[in-house]
Amino acid sequence: MEPTLSAHDARASRLRLEQTDFWIRAQIVPFAVFMGFMLLLQIFGALFIWEHPAAPWWRHWPEQWVYPLQTVVTLVLLARLWKYYEFRWSWKWCAAGAIFGAVGIGVWLLPTVMYDRLGLTGETTGWQKWLGLAARTKGFNPAEAFGEGTPAFWAALVMRFVRAVVVVALVEEILWRSFMMRFVEDWEGDYWKRPFGRASWKSYLIVTGLFMLAHAPVDYPAAFVYGSLTYVLCIWSKSLGACVVMHGVANLLMGLFAVVYGKYGLW
Image (cartoon, one colour):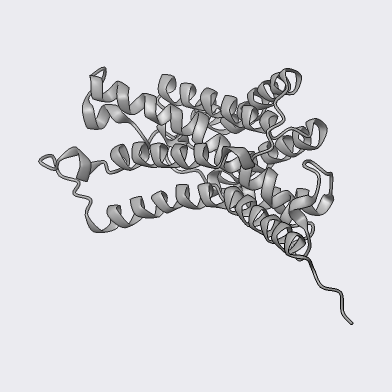
């Protein structure tokens, strides 16, 4: 006779499966929703954008309303799923994350600084292009839509920083470090049970490579270095929170650099 589960055991097993399903969704869905808004921006830009002096701002610069909407929706979703994240906050490792973030973004910004210091103009070619040397002046700039210093300008700028420093840092690190580093190691097994931050050449190469490819080609070299630094912090600290702090500090410094030096193409 085959053994059978009691009603209590069956219910407990079903609850464990449901919790596992919720955990997996919590790792993936916020990033998917965030990227869904990027797709919306591309579709709107292709079909409805009107680059004309008489065009209303929401048609001429659709990112000025898509980004804030994306930020709010993703933040609400993250708040609802918060209990499924293993941040393991630590002052020590968060401080280390801030240092790693400053170093990592320094590497990221180096190519455009070199572009200016070398006196380059226009499009680069050869090794300069491969290293990511570019002007990076065209990108998100609320002054174009609302005018410098207006209330709408400051509102758009604040929301852009919230998006970069909080939302992007959370959704990317949850996906890459909490989910993908486990998933690529044992995608057919109980990968969600693997300890956070376990070192593996396989997870390092795949996750860092995917992180690099998720960015623009001009950022590939910097993204590889930055992704490698984040991986080192992850396996040293065993703290998802430290990785989030690293990403948040890096994006904060990048945003400040972009605004102060007019390098809007960085974000």
